[in-house]
Length: 190
Image 1 (cartoon, rainbow, N blue to C red):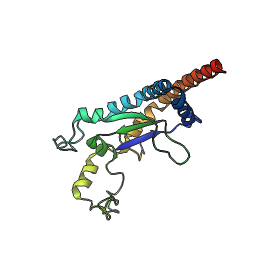
Image 2 (tube, rainbow, N blue to C red):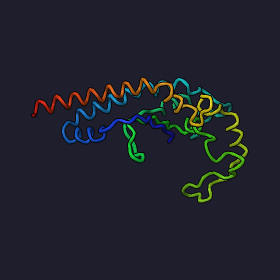
Image 3 (spheres, one colour):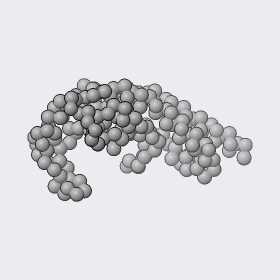
Image 4 (cartoon, one colour):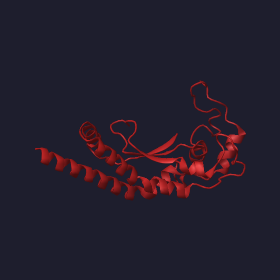
C-alpha cells in the first residue's frame, strides 16, 4: 500500500480524540468525517494528475493491470495512522490499487545498476534479481513527482505539495470547531 502522510504538528489532538471517545462517540465520528473532508482536495488533486494509461501494454486483466477506474478509486484519505517517532499522522493519503502503487513508486529503490537485487522481504531473504523488464518499465515511466528535483512519488507527493495550504487550513478549522464544541460542553457541565 503506497501512502504519504501529511505532516502538520498539532498538539493534543490524539488526547482530544481519546477523551471524546469516552464521552461523545457521535462527536468523534463527526470530527473524523470533518478531517477526512478536509483531505478531499488531496484525493481530487491525485486523481487529476494520475494518468489514464501510462504505458502501452499495461492494460490487462491481471492483478497489476491498469484499469483507470480502479486506480482512481484506490486513492483514499484516512484519519490517523501508525505513530512516527514522536508524533502520529492526522491524515494519510493512500493508493491501494497495485497498478497505481507501481506507477507511483516504481524505481524508488533496488532498480539501479548498483543494486542488482531488490531488498529482502518475507519469503525472499535475499530479495529477487532485478530484470531488464523492470529497468525498461522504470525508464519509460515519467520522472518522480512531476516536480523538478523531486525524489518522492509520482502522484501522492505532488498532490500533497499542491494542496497542503488548503488542507492544513481546513483541517485546523475542523479541529478548532471540535475544540470549541468541547469547551461549550465543559462550561455547560461545570
